[in-house]
Length: 126
Length: 126
DNA sequence: ACCCAAATTGACAACGGTTCTCACTTTATT
DNA sequence: AATAAAGTGAGAACCGTTGTCAATTTGGGT
Image (cartoon, rainbow over all chains, first blue to last red; front, side):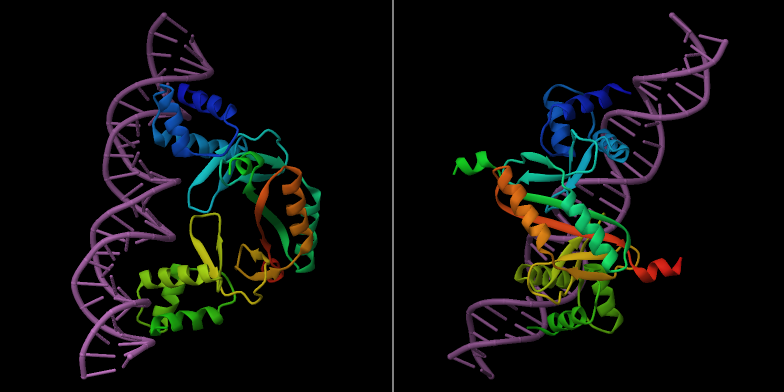
């Protein structure tokens, strides 16, 4: 556990929404941390493999990271304006995925489900 | 409608699975078509905007395209070994998405749902 | 506290998919 | 056939990300 790594961990702990590696790097630099972009990438990659952070890819090709509160399987409802994120757990979708896979003879099926919209506070602002 | 564009359209018509722009370009070159990679990208981009093809991004950063049979909203069940694709329509998921959004005060919610697994014939091969 | 092997870091190059630029060619219209 | 608009090709540029490698830091054993 290095200084850089724990700074990133601490930052993620207090960042509620999905952020890109570059955003996180700028945030760390902004608060005076000496850390390189490559290290941020490496640390996030390692954390993602360990399941310590969730990874999401938006419409563009950049990945965004977030320290999720619940450890178990869940999905995200993300505001496409401000990035505000809600964790959602639902068995209906899981069951539907399993049933659909079985009906078509598929096995070892995983599913990617993400919802994006406009949150209440962003709606109020308009 | 140019020669290149119609060659690509014809190719997509007879390609059942999702293919990347570069794969489609190679396939066209392989059958003797003179077409540049940039043109393939531009044509696919235009078709995607028109809703003539569906776009999917795998685990990597490359986009894959497919001419879908049904015009209405649907999802995909994709074999992660051979790429074999099944189009799936289901109202359970749509209703769940709408309900979840409402519960959290979100509006204008869209959802991305993709299933990936191993198809029956790929399972047999093992 | 010190030594040392192993792991991590930083600066920068390289990579891969995609998009842009711009001169040239093709298409469609009159 | 003339011409404006649209599409094309070659290669550079772009952008997020990953690799390289020397230098630094970390943690365990003594």
